[in-house]
Image (cartoon, rainbow, N blue to C red; front, side):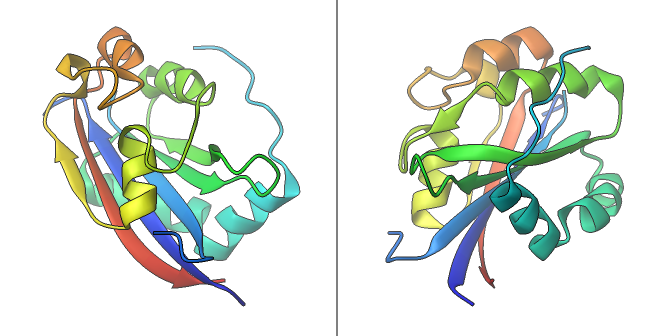
Length: 156
């Protein structure tokens, strides 16, 4: 089992690697595009974290509308979405938009949280410069505003 740092990223409409593998869960508050089939490494990470079992209750508890799980692709060394969970169809378009992205370590909010493992809060990502939040145009289009990234460690 390797030691893994897992940053979690939360968002809402209303408001140093060191050889480790890092993950990001992206919680969104924000219709119809097919999701690509997850690769085996993506499913393994989601299963190991209990993402699909834990996130629905967490979303209800925190009153967020959706969550994304991000992880480093072992082939490309870029951070990719490897799971998502939404509470309503209004967030589904944001999830599909986000699935088109991948990030370099340290780049954009996802990459910064991934790299540092620490938390970052942005009250309205739809108004940020694209260098700070790469998905700014999509956030504006889909009504996503508040985003918080939370870093945490896990063992896999």
